[in-house]
Length: 124
Length: 124
DNA sequence: TTAAGTGTACTATTTAGGGTAGTACAGTAA
DNA sequence: TTACTGTACTACCCTAAATAGTACACTTAA
Image (cartoon, protein in one colour):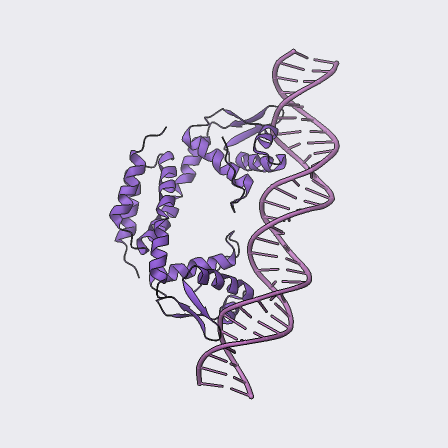
């Protein structure tokens, strides 16, 4: 499920956070779902439990999961809508990236067709 | 000219590299232009000379500038075309970002109008 | 020739973040 | 009771980044 890139500059705990959010947005994880326990995921990814805990703590703080001592961690009911709102802020990143591409003399048409492609893709 | 964000996770030397490339793409720095000396930029930004040197070394390696001992550093004749080619590879990043926005239920139309805006902007 | 400015090359040191190791405690559920 | 869960804590290691300081060779202009 999770893919960790040890060569990345992005810290492992943040990779886990990002992928968890991606899974929620993508519907792979749904509201109320139980996610892997700290120790279990730690074993599966061969990562120290503290690192997983750090990721889960961050996700809890963001309202994506809820940690229940003794029971486990679960995706909150509001996770997806919270993320959708947050993602909208990435429109700023989009503008910056497109601006850079424009400077590189990449045509508007090329950008637009790129957008069309992504939106016409079927999710598997 | 340069803006350094000390709170950023991106290393200072890499911020300088990025901004130098941006200036070249944007036409603020042109082929043959002399760029600030290591010591001068070091003073201006209150950054250790070694950090500036590291950035310049990287830019030299990428073919964006040429360092000439005793004379200074200059933007190469091929800098802009080199960067344009490299920027084209960022179309992959664009796809990923758009994919994320799509997952967040942001409409295609909203994305497209965002693109239009950027391309219709006048550069100052 | 001299002086100032240039890039370059070192070594040593500090700092902060990330990650690991190990232990311990309390709650939950079969 | 037993095994699982999240949580908390200290200590330690490692790496990259950045700083500090010095030194050398080259170029330019006075």
